Image (tube, rainbow, N blue to C red; front, side, top):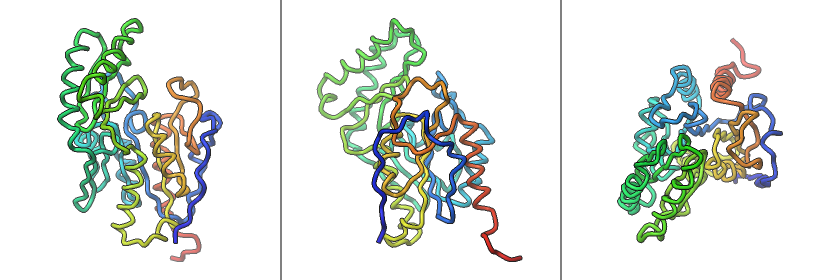
Length: 291
C-alpha cells in the first residue's frame, strides 16, 4: 500500500528555498515533469521564438534514457512536441488538456470546448489587432493573450478585451480566465490543470511499468516549473513526496512570494545543469557493485 506525506502548507517564501542541485534522490525511480517556457527555454516576447537550445535538448534526451520524462506546457501539444523534438517523452499541452505519450497514449479533456475557444480567439484577434505588442496564441485547448510587449498605457485595454469576451455567451459559461507571466489564458471550465495532468501521467507511468499501488513508494517525482500555473502541480504531487522546483532568479518580480515548491533553481542554465546531474547520478554504478 502506498504511503503519502502530508501536503506542505503554502507558507514558503520562494526566495528562501534550498538549491535543487543539492537534493539526494537516493535509489528511488525518478519521474520527471518539466514546464517549457521559462524553464527549458527563456521567456521571449515573440512566442514562436522560444526555440529549445541544442544543449538543453541533449540534456532532456540523456535523462529520458534513465527516467520517464514529461513536458507539461500551456502551449499546444503539437507545438511543444515540435519545439522539444525528443522521442519517447510524454507531452501534455494546453495545461494538460491534451496529452500523448509512449505506447500510443492519448488523452484529451473537454474537447467540446475547442470550437468555443476558437471563436473566442477570433473575437480577441479583432478587438486587439490595433494594440501594439499584443498577440493571441491558439493552443487548441486554450487561448493565450500575450501582453509582455504592450505599452503600460495600453495594458488595461488587453485585460478589458479578455473580460469583455468572457461576458459574452457562450463564453461566460464555458471558459475561465487565468493569469500568468504577462499573459492571460482562457481555458475550458473544467476541474483540470497541470496538477491533474501530472497525477494522471504519474499513474500512466505506473501502469506502463506494471506497478501495483505500492509502486509509488519507490518513485521520486520531480516537477520543474517557473510560473504560477505550475503551483497546481507542485501542490498535487506533494503527497507523493515530490521535489517541486521553482525556476526563479533572485530579482524575479512577476510571481507571488509564496509557493508550494520545495526547491529552487535560478534560470534555464541551472535547469540544464540540474537535469545533467540527475542523469549523472543515474549512470553512476550502484553502491557496492563490483567489476
